[in-house]
Length: 403
Image (cartoon, rainbow, N blue to C red; front, side):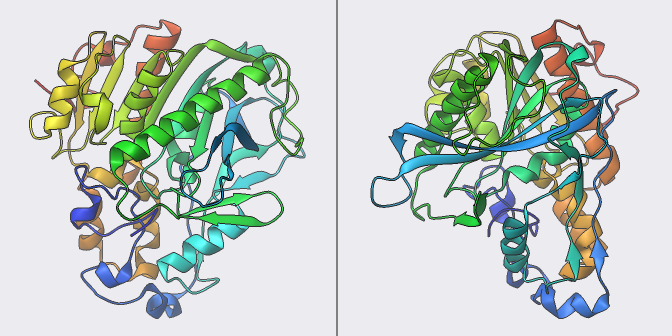
C-alpha cells in the first residue's frame, strides 16, 4: 500500500500505521489489476474549484537542510525537501495551470496503481504557476500541510488550494523517502526508503524537524531572501509578504499526528488541526496550550481512540472535537475526489467506493471540510469569530461536536 486511493481494509483505518492509501488492486474485493480494466476507455479526473474570493497561484521550491542528514538513506546525505506554495493572485494571464502531480511523480504513482499509460489522466489544479502574489491581500498568514504516511503532498490539494483562495499562503510539504515519490529538479525521483519496521513516533519526529526547517525557510522569504537551493524564480510579490506571526498547520492521518508533534517542537505554530490521524509519541504525554481542532470521520473519535482521549486531556488552550457523519478515513484526502471518478479504471464498483469513502457525497464532503477548516483558522489566526465553532449548524448537519 502507498499514497493515494485505497480499498476499505484495515490498513486505511485511523489507528493503522499505514495511512497513505494507494490502491493495491490485488487487495481490493475484486482481486483484479487496474490495468485489466483500461480497455473501458480513458478517464480524466477533475478537481472541485476553490471557493474563496481570490484566484490561486503556486510554485514548488527545492529546500536543503544542511544541519541534518536524511535518516532514510545511507551515506550521511543532507536532508532535502520539496514543498509547494499556494497563494492568492489577481493576475493569471500567461501563467499555466499546475498539474496535480509533476510528470515523473505522476507516472510513478499511476504505475503503482497498475493503471495502463494513457488510460487515466490525473487532475489539473486551480494553481497558476508563478502567478504574482495579490499584494492587496496584505501580508499572508501561513498554513502548513502534512499528508498521510507514504502519501504525496498532492493528496491535500482540494483543501490546500481552497485555503489559498481565501487569502492564505499554504505550504504543502513532501517528506522525502517517507512519501512514495518526490520529484526534484533535473528529473530526479526519490521514492519511499523508510524501513518497514520504523516506529510512527520516530517518523513523526522526522516530520516535525522537516516542518520546523520549512518554517525557517519561510522566515527567509519574509526577510526578502530566496531559499530555493537552485535559485528558482519566486512569484513576484512574495518576498517580504509572508506573515510569520500567524502560522497554522493541518494534516491528514499521520500528517494530522505530525501537527501535534510539530507544534511541540516549534512554538511559532499558533494553531493546529488533525484530520482523522491517530497520535503517537510525545503528543500523548505533553501539554499543549495553543488552539487545536480534532476533525474525525464517522467511526473515529476520542471515545474510541485512546490516543485522542489522552491528547485531549493535554490540550490546555482552545480545543474543538468535530465529527463528520457519513465520512471515512480517506474522506479527508484527495481520495474523496479521485476515487469516485477513477473507479471504472480501477475496477471498483460503486458499492466498493462507498465502502471505502463512506456515504457522504464527495462534493459535499469537500465543501464541509473546506468550510470548517477555514472557519477554524480564520477564527484562531485572524480573530474572525465563527458561529460554526460554537454550536451545531442547520446548514451543516453532517457536523457534530463530540461530547
